[in-house]
Amino acid sequence: MIEVSSLSKKYGNHLAVNNVSFSIKKGEVVGFLGPNGAGKSTIMNIMTGYLSLTSGNVSIDGFDIIDQPEEAKKRIGYLPEIPPLYTDMTVREYLYFMYDLKKVSFPKKPHIDEITRLVKIDNVIDRLIKNLSKGYRQRVGIAQALIGNPDLLILDEPTVGLDPKQIIEIRNLIARLGKNHTIILSSHILSEIQEVCERIIIINKGNIVADDTPTNLSKNLSSDHSLSLRVVGNEADIQKILSSVPNIKSIKCLGKKEEGSVDFVLEPKPDCDIRAAVSERLAERKKTILSLHSGEMTLEQIFLRLTDDTDRGAYYSKETESPKSNTPKVKLNLETGEALVGEQTEAEKEYKKEDK
Amino acid sequence: MTAVFKREFKSYFTSPLGYVYLAIFLFFEGMYFSTLYNNSSTSIEIIFSSLATIVVFITPVLTMRLLSEDRRQKVDQALLTAPVTVTGIVLGKFLAALAVYALAFSPTLLFQITVSFMASVNWLIYLNAALGAMLIGAALIAIGMFISSLTESPVISCILTLISFLLLMVLTNLAAMTGVSWLVSAAEKIAFVNLFFAFTESVFRITDIIYLVSISAVFVFLSVRAVEKRRWS
Image (cartoon, rainbow over all chains, first blue to last red; front, side, top):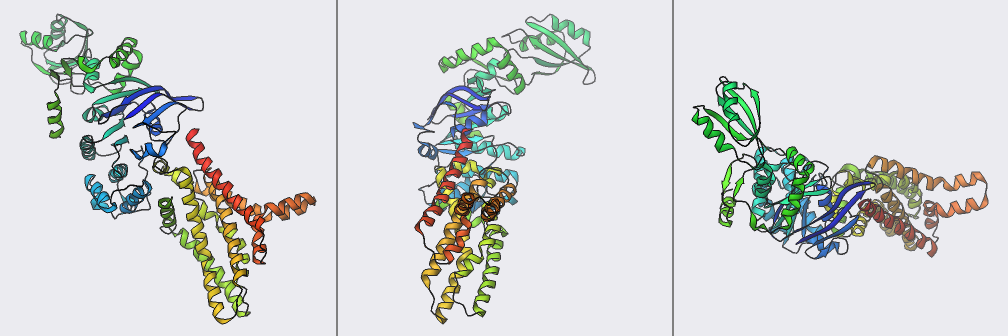
């Protein structure tokens, strides 16, 4: 569906995108993850033909975005970072305009009605866009991208600036659209991407630093990350017990946060799971664990790991070339640290989707 | 192109801008017509050249937003990622502004028809003056649109356009002050706004027409290039 090969973009002397290559198959839902200014929007703008490229190739469904822009653009629905809305028009006028602009062949009114129902803006259809709230504007932006029913949807930070309820709604909408569209969405919020995407491409400073499934990424990123622990008892006792647990690299006491208990941060040795051992050892000594969880992996930490740790960088380049079959048996949920044993089957995935 | 044209034309009338533009024209046209009427004159075409100054002063408001506003509001992303060519977008906008300009002159047609019932009128002279007004307008709008493609601010675009239009108007006087004869004749050629008077005096020169059409074409082309250039920068 999409082939991007050795794509580079220079703004003056600043290299915004550096020799990026990836390909996306039909039906995939792919997330671009990266901090602000990583080059996510630039790559999206190039793929949609808004910006040119300095070198490399982008082809959409076999059509080169530079040589056959009209054919390529017909296949793309694009929601830029700021929804491109004419605020002096009503929602209906604007969508009709976009319909005309995109030279769509479906019957006009039923097509627009269907889209407005899908993104739930049919109740504001005759209101001026400038009087709409941010959430509604964002949805009008998505509606605009859906006009003409393009195979490929490119959504640049579709949930930014929305309230939690709207975020969930938009996320569900994307998950629904993902069933019969190829979707690329960008975000700097990890959990959001993880919820809807089957594949994550992490971009930093114009380079792809990781390209994998969310479960693989989380496994590799969280296998050796720290545990937060809260135990009833005094500091010295527990420190002693913990130091007898094998495979712990460091123990850091955070002091008293709750009456009668002590907080610790444990860093295990690489590739070791110490949760069971810690829990058992404390139970043996009749110490009550109030909480035990993996420290949250923030995006910053991931970036630090992916960009600073050269070993890991090498691991990823190896991983992306190898077939997907060697997915790990034990996976960790990136956010909560909970372990999912065994591979998630297609049926489970489907079930999860429907559950949403 | 038609989608852009329709939207752009409508947008003039969703804000007071289009109405104000038409109202100013209507006021002056009415005033000149009543003067002609009181003098029992049938030379409606004189209205065209009398409006030259008005055209120069208020046409910048027609063109100031054409390409700058979209960029400021980031709507250009929707236009440029749609399966249309940049030329189509720019032409749509150009024609929309030209349509409002033409609408501003349309009352003269009513005057001409009204007078034709009462006296004999010369349609050829009228049509020649109208053609001149349209071609000059097209050239001015193309220049204004090009200037609007260079900035994101409609205000800056409006001021720069006004300055260039005024320069076009006073160019011959400026050249005359220097007293250099070749400079004067060059200025006369460049200051195409003054062709309003030639067309009104029923001068029909094919060179003038080609000249004005070329100016429009060149500046429409430059606008397209200016929009394209931003993609490549």
